[in-house]
Length: 301
Image 1 (cartoon, rainbow, N blue to C red):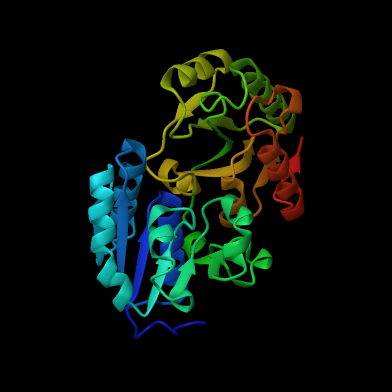
Image 2: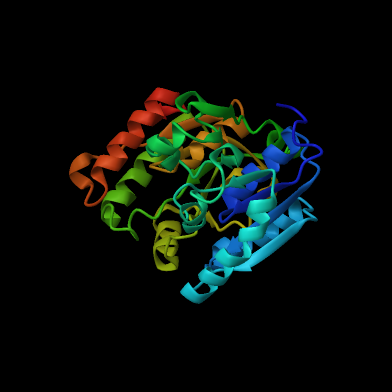
């Protein structure tokens, strides 16, 4: 598919930092020259800040941002997308579950649409995966899948890091009511015990943007580890902190699917919660660990 869009107008719509990473990967990998990127800002400080920082980092010159943080602005934004979508040769949409896709799926011809991943939610989009072309980490599960190995992003990040660090990827399990604070802290204790057995490098806890500040403070004090909030998505942690992640440990972060592609050779540890500790989304988390096993992204403990 290399170069097939070089002389055609393509419109990309994204509304999350991870989707913008996929835009960069696709544009670079297939040398898309004639394009326009449309970015939805949703009013979340962390989300919007990361999107803005990525636009600067990748030096994206053909870009528009839409503030769609309330119902009125959503209606205005949807109307403004009509002509760009209709006139584009191809429309790339970052999330099959977004209001934009739902509004335009019966307006824009299916053959013109290419979807991106939205984390592991891609694997639950069985109907869309049977109809639409999708640029995906999970291309083998998609009828018209285009494989994404984050080759271009890996090359972009290929710099000499100063030190080796063990990364713990945080999650908002407590904030979402998925498990209790003590159950989550118990999993963190297992992670740190595992890393102590593996050897001595520094441990840094990368906070999810949805984690509460008071919980992060308690994690730092209780486990004596450094807590970091990132300006960029977790996939760019190596470049932002100038480190080499030698291990990645987490409970349910779907970022391990992308990070295992970007940081080749890095050991990944996944800590399965006890089902009796799960208060919400038990079936989803059980299924997620089945996907972890199917894709062999790391050691499940």
